[in-house]
Amino acid sequence: MRSVPKKFWLTPLILFIVIVLLHIFSFRYDWVEEVYSAHFYPVISSLLRILTRYIPFSFGDVLYMLVCIWLLFAIIRFFFRKPTWKKLFISLRNLIVKCLWIYIIFLVFWALNYYRKGIGYTMDLVPDKYSTEDLKNVTAQLRNKLNINRRLMDSLQISYTDDKTTFDKAINLYDSAKKTYPYLTYDHPDVKKMIFGTIGNYCGYLGYYNPFTGEAQVNTKVPPFMIPFTTCHEIGHQIGFASESEASFAGYLVIRSGNSVVFKYSAYFDLFAYANSELWLRDSVAALQNKQLLDTSVRQDYHTYRQYSEAYKNPIEPLLTTLYGNYLKAHNQPEGIESYDEVVAWLVAYYKKYGKI
Image (tube, rainbow, N blue to C red; front, side, top):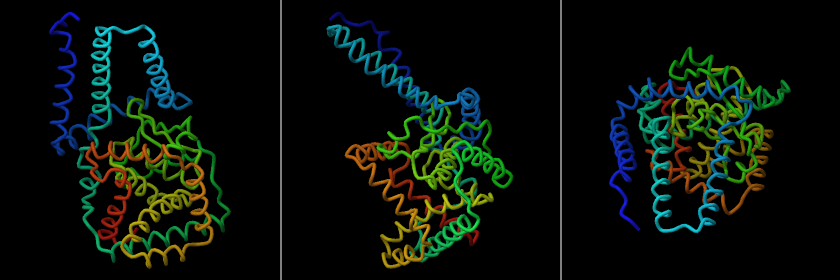
């Protein structure tokens, strides 16, 4: 194989240097917060949502599907053409260039948000280590809120709405909440239901944010009481809170400041599960008592959730969970998949500062 010209590797080298510079920038959390997250990202994400919000289906799902099909055909075509070492070398270089470009776009369009100071900096909250007594107090408050809202739903005969109405309600909640929390402003809303929701169930995904299209994707093939809070969580990602715990906390703040019983029940259902699971590790007797004090309808919903989880158990899901956990660790979330549980620390910090949940 002839030697390749020096310029052959020039493009990959330049792209690699750009990635290094972006990561150097990310080490300065104050720069990320005050330059990227406060000014640059809102413009990029808004432009993406303006481009995709009127597409009536999940463009992000379709985009990922097309990429998978293209990769499959590219691999088949490559090997059917009986590749030479030269062709293999050129293909490898071209693949590296494509991957580097994708990663740069990923960083610029979204992933630098992993390195911002975040919602704690904005609200002057510090999610420090908390005592078991603090955890018991917060979990008890969540349990009471959970029961109260479930009883309201039963007494007022409030039922779950269709997906679009749920999405619109979440958008309205964010619109109302920005008066109290201006950093939760959500312009040019774009929430879509996942096309491949059943596949998402097998993979363990309730939703995701697509950084390449700006869409918030929600899996609507799950029990209905999970959808409202998931929607607010994904919108939390859209407005720039990359951390899983901060996206959940943003969703909680929005729902808490609103007047939707269904959304409050959905939020407290999820948050109580996180808090009581943490309490179980510290004081299993107290955690068991919390479960016994749940309203009958709430216990039925937890039974429904367990049935849902069991129905979609498969050997692939734990692998995907591990991979996603490693992805989170690589992007400034050292707890990995346990980062979701860290929303409890935010709740405790909020409770200690304001005396309520």
